[in-house]
Image 1 (cartoon, rainbow, N blue to C red):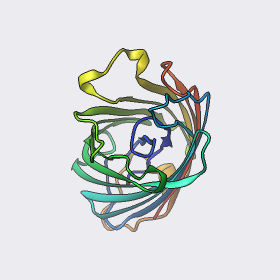
Image 2 (image 1 turned 60 degrees about the vertical axis):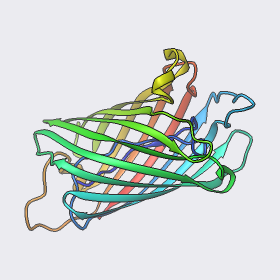
Image 3 (image 1 turned 45 degrees about the vertical axis):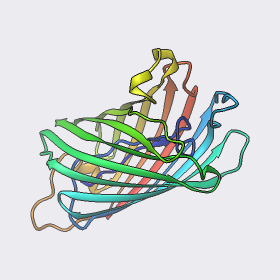
Image 4 (image 1 turned 30 degrees about the vertical axis):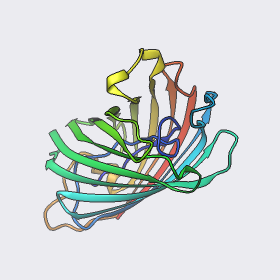
Length: 262
């Protein structure tokens, strides 16, 4: 199946006080198209220092994805954010591309490589652009699917912070019924690898997500499509919560996603 990502946008780092939390999948299906909405609200928001960006109260993204071949896909994601004490505005555009290096079979390992670039707009104008790159690793066995997505990050622009940062996303998913799956997720960010600071000053969060699977995805989660068969539409709906693991992280983020692939 084409990557159907689960994400919550939470405001730490740049650009546009944004960090996207995404669980992509390795495999691509030639000719498939996907549209996905992701949204989150945040409780226990930390007060930003006078010289820092305001953290987010809510965030919304609408992603469009196309897979021209079985080994390549790209996606465009406009994002709206509402910083603490501010208004909800369109603040950034993210573009990503992904290459399948090892297609994941029904049982076993799959590997892809992704690159992303984010450009800020409106109130975020003047913030540096941000880029990221790294592997997507999946391992499937039975009804279990493990996904790891470590990324190196950087900034570009007059006010860019030199050096590389690091972000990670991880998910362990279990499909326990035809229409249902549950997952444990973890996300983290180190703004600068050369000056990471103590663990409690870093951003790390984890929590559960429940998925409702409708259509092809509900029974074909870990199987490849038969050669020559036609793609069918599928829906994936997720509700979840992320809890802070460090004092530097927003206490709680409630998130929702709806994805349609056809």
